[in-house]
Figure 1 (cartoon, each protein chain N blue to C red):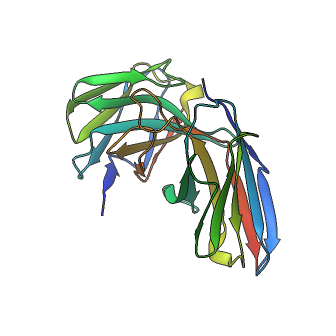
Figure 2: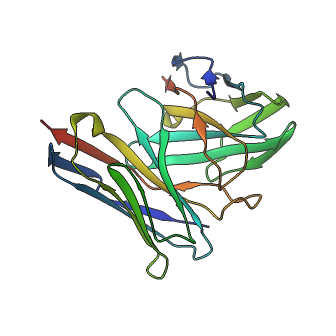
Length: 113
Length: 114
């Protein structure tokens, strides 16, 4: 079974703090994704990576950056957290891109005060 | 880019009834349409998908239909059970082409009343 894990289930940070969310997958998948989930808006893609050190912007990259130094690990960085970044963050991985199953992590619920 | 709209946003049915969730997409080049189920407090998981060379696909009590001309696809759940209660997301993509990601609909909260 594919296993995708995220570093925290719940996180509370203050406005202006730098926040790191980590995701690890154990299936040697090429592709990894970071989504933000908000009620009524579905899953919106923040960034994705199709190879080590490669990254592409998704639909809502503003205020976020990412890092992929190793194939199994994909980090989402909030350079200066703001209250409108309070949300559920989901990581996913897949073998292929659009046409392959994405396997999701359990999610991190981030609250920015 | 691709835009996916999903309806209804909430759906309540009696156990044993059928449930239908509909999605429309904007990019006629999209050719891969998965459905994900997210139970309360859990991660989304793929339950069924369909590619554009197929009009319908079934897996036990769930089925997906695709109308490429009208650019819409639907999820059908028959004989609903309480464990079907969850949020369902549709998505669309231009297959495996690099740079073409999944675009998700807004989700449907299905409640099955025992």
